[in-house]
Image (cartoon, rainbow, N blue to C red):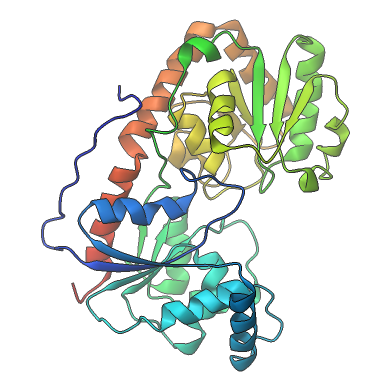
Length: 367
């Protein structure tokens, strides 16, 4: 098993050479340096490829430029002016036919494709959107303009081919920094703490019902809820605000987030929908067993094979899985080891970077 500080070796993909890759990226303030999909370009760079990153810049000048650009394009209603400004800067780089132009968060930048009937194949978008969730109308329209795409869960391939075209989409998992997120088995196994993280796509009503039942059976256990304060009004969460078994967390450094993964006994994550989930991949890397629902792309990240999953809103089944983990610590530790191994073998960023380079070769005809 690999541990923190693992030394990785990078190799050039045969037949593709060292290409230049331009990235349109975003960084989200609630993620740290070692989190989120925006880590990909730096591992692409380590593979030997030359990269250039255009990211969103939350400055007054960029907001002003983005606002005027949006008006000029007929997007007067558009509110994310800093993203519009980054798209303007990115589009000015569309000069080199043999380079790759990768939109890391297509869901946020689909306006960029408005100018094409069908975008060039060397403009690739990563689609994060769960297929079960409704698309904004303009996003659905511009999906048809995208010629090449990467999706983060297997079911997305067939679904998005209806918009983009057959054999124009590659499934590549979401990566995780396994050198930053790593297990601390000796501490987590002694813990009487269960973690929940996030809000987007979570089944917070189910969370409330399950926590309430578990707290009655195991009053000595604590539930760590990592949820920003502005989202604690969601159904289920607001009922837990003053629960004696719940501890709330928000705006903590990524080292403290890692500490929560390492020191909790389980990750309790009832989900309504999910393409991919950052908390899931980070928990896997930290060897934290996951209790979640069988929705979206969960099975692409070990669900059902590495750790058991339950049907959405089946409270009894979820409680039973938690109780099995609590009653069988050796089984829990075995699942923990398998979670870490799955992350090492399937989700480590160097491996994911190489998969992207291979996908570039297959999707872009000029290379």
